[in-house]
Structures are given as C-alpha cells and as structure tokens.
Image (tube, rainbow, N blue to C red; front, side, top):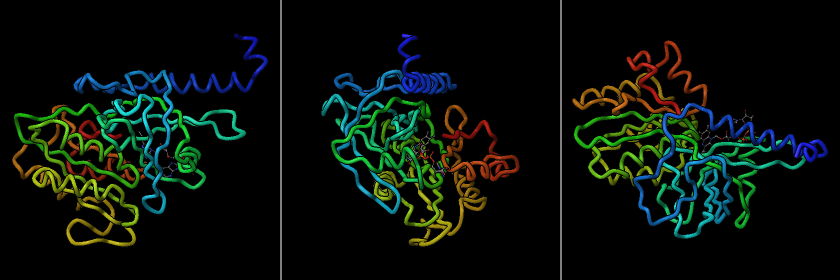
Length: 307
Ligand SMILES: Cc1cc2nc3c(=O)[nH]c(=O)nc-3n(C[C@H](O)[C@H](O)[C@H](O)COP(=O)(O)OP(=O)(O)OC[C@H]3O[C@@H](n4cnc5c(N)ncnc54)[C@H](O)[C@@H]3O)c2cc1C
C-alpha cells in the first residue's frame, strides 16, 4: 500500500486530505448524533448514523429561485421507498474535486426537505463569487451525480407536551436553512407540541428572501405558534408589519424577547436554549459578542445555540 502511495503522490495527498477531513468532522463535539429512531421502520434510510460511507446522489431538478440561489432536488440511491433520514436542521457534507486540483472540497449544506420525504432530498444553495462548492453545485444538470456524506449533527430538539414555551429563531441571509428546518420540526414533527416560535430573518434585500411560500404555509397552518418577521437592510421592503427596515437589531429582538416573556410561558427549551442563531459571522458576532445585542437583553451564551 505504501509503495502505491509513494508512486502516486496525488492519490496519497487526496486520501490523506479525505481522511483528515473525515476525522476532524467525526471528532467535533457532538451535542447530538442525528437520530431517526422514532421514524417508521418500513423505509430504508439513505443516511444512517455514520459519516464514513459516501453516498452518491443524482440531480433530478435544478431551479434558479432568485438572483443567486438554486433549489436542487436529488434522488436518493435507494429509490422511491427510501427517505434521507437527515434530521431537520442537520447538514450533509458535499465532496468534489475541482479540475486540476489536488484536494477535494468538502462543504456542509442543510437539506430543506423533510427527513421523511420519500425518494428525494433538496438543497438550497446560494452561489458565492468564485465559490468552489456552490459554483460546482450550481453547474450541475439533471442526471449529474454528487458525492455526499452525513449527517452532521444539528440540534437535538425535544417537544414540550405539557407546558407552553417560546423560543426565538434568528437567521441571517443564506443561514436560513437550519432555522427553517428547526421551525418546521418544532411545528410539524410532534403532535401536541406546545412550543411557540418567533422567527426573525435579516436579509440584504427582499430579493434575497427564499422559502417565503414555505414559511407562509407554516404561518397559515400554525397562526398561534409561529410569527415571522423579515428585517430588510437594503432594497425592497414589503407589506406592513411583516417587514422591518434595517438589521435584526436590539429593537426588533427586544420586541421578540418581550413577547416571549409576556406570554407567561416558559422561555427556552428543556435544555435552557432560548435563542437559535444561524447567519454570517459578522451578524453572529454582533448578536453574541461581548456587549452584543443578546447580552444587553439578558440572554447568556449558554442560552444561545449557534448552528
Ligand atoms: C452547518 C452549515 C450548513 C450550511 N448550509 C448551507 C445551505 O443550506 N445552503 C448554502 O447555500 N450554504 C450553506 N452553508 C455554507 C456552505 O457550506 C459554504 O460555506 C458556501 O456554499 C460557500 O462555499 P464555496 O465553496 O462556494 O465558497 P468558497 O470557495 O469557500 O469561498 C468563495 C468566496 O465566497 C466567500 N464566502 C464563502 N462563504 C461565505 C459566507 N457564508 N458568507 C459570505 N461570504 C462567503 C469567501 O470569503 C470567498 O471569497 C452551510 C454552512 C454550514 C457551516
């Protein structure tokens, strides 16, 4: 084996890189290992609990849904009777080796499809200028394949069946995918769950809003349990109270926190997590850094989950 690698430095380098990346991901602290145990036993799962084995997904459809984002639908290797089993808010890791590159590129993406959807898995991918993984995913056509591993740990959400409680979900830009997955899991996955969700989503312009139909559908179905507010810092503020001009700032958060406190309900889940956050580093730092917005509102670091 050593001689093979000695004769093929490229193979040795890629194998080492893949092994190191896998070990790094596997050795991250895992508050939760993706678990689909509560789901029906009749289906096969495309993503059992190990990252070690790669899967090959086939592109079925690729739709441009706004100026920089595509919704890509993949078929699962096990066919129409298989579900992904990737828990809501967990991610999968894509892998591809760019032309003329020595090392593969690994990137996490959070499926927007439900863990139970049969036969398919959907990703929402924002394209970054010169983005290696996002550019590759945007270039895929129906029939093309992509190598993925997973799932990567998300958040171990448990329902509240006996008492009312509230949580605040904050998304920034393309960071909405795990936040959407968590909101959908809270609202739809456990009958009798008494958890309410305040979702605040900051975008640069209203053209960056994706999953609007899906969020509106959840709001229609659960008017007492979900409230969504869009904070639009740039162009195109939409109709009335749903849209606020500016960032997700202290004023907006203080309203959401006040709403949680005023409901007389318990604020936060059974682990004490009150705020769930997924956004670009600058936004997350403004929220959670020393003297940041959440600290000013009395929310401690232990009470915040960052995806
Ligand atoms: C747990 C997790 C889940 C994720 N889920 C999704 C998802 O569902 N959908 C999705 O589109 N993305 C998601 N991402 C981000 C994704 O993994 C990649 O980081 C992103 O697609 C950029 O990768 P790239 O290879 O295209 O860009 P790179 O080649 O790494 O970078 C190209 C350029 O883009 C800039 N850039 C890269 N990432 C960002 C960023 N986040 N904000 C601003 N500039 C950036 C770089 O600075 C660089 O200039 C997730 C990230 C994490 C950690």
